[in-house]
Length: 296
Ligand SMILES: NC(=O)c1ccc[n+]([C@@H]2O[C@H](COP(=O)([O-])OP(=O)(O)OC[C@H]3O[C@@H](n4cnc5c(N)ncnc54)[C@H](OP(=O)(O)O)[C@@H]3O)[C@@H](O)[C@H]2O)c1
Image (cartoon, rainbow, N blue to C red; front, side):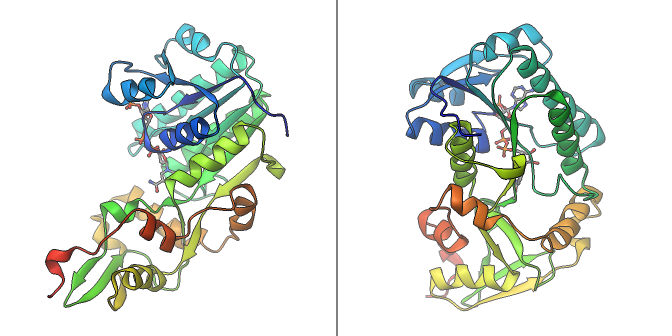
């Protein structure tokens, strides 16, 4: 698996978080990128075009549009969108299957599928098992393919940050303390996928978990506290805070179980030595403690 791609790399999901990170990494390495987009007039698609990305309008249920988008590409990256309900997970599998079938028809030489860590196990999480089904379909397709399996995004802490209470950083999650949560910065998913797409990274076994750090709740709180210059504590919450949502409960249960499997941190650092740990993500993203709650 060490061919150097020189032609066009097709990217599905380029207007999203992970696909966007893949585009960033490919452009930084001088690659030509074709984005498969359903809304070429959207702001995000136009922003890609302004950076030199070729846009190819596609519809998942239109094989001709997919064939045109994948014509003569050197490599193809795809992810599958978030799903929650049983109908959405079926849609996710259908979308992944349509993209694989199109890659087979277009004889794409090399494919990278962005799955999820846990898709290779019996996780009990529907939107992980849907990705496992897409992986299975990819294995049976005969395509030369690598699966990247990201762990939980560090970016979640931007959406649900720790709070500051009485001058102390407080982090609460429905994960027992002591469990080492697997975390990754989204930009590193892009760097890893780009290295594989460009043929400059070997992935023995054809799959790699994409991870940047493994930390307990207390260690995560401490990382935010160290950055803010404040003491920090972690409070493990019960799964009942998830409001009885069985998919969310299954996922948080899996985070605890999945942490027991050895991580691929060393393999990822061999591909991208600059992978961020959480402390680096906090520094580099300019995270600041919510100052309105910090006593002066
Ligand atoms: N959050 C986590 O910690 C985490 C960790 C590992 C894996 N994951 C998995 O990552 C996935 C989400 O990735 P993300 O955050 O990168 O997604 P995202 O930012 O929501 O982007 C989704 C992308 O898919 C495109 N898309 C969706 N449906 C489409 C369709 N029918 N036709 C064409 N394009 C379509 C969107 O295009 P538009 O711009 O047109 O909408 C967008 O480019 C989920 O499957 C999730 O399970 C998440």
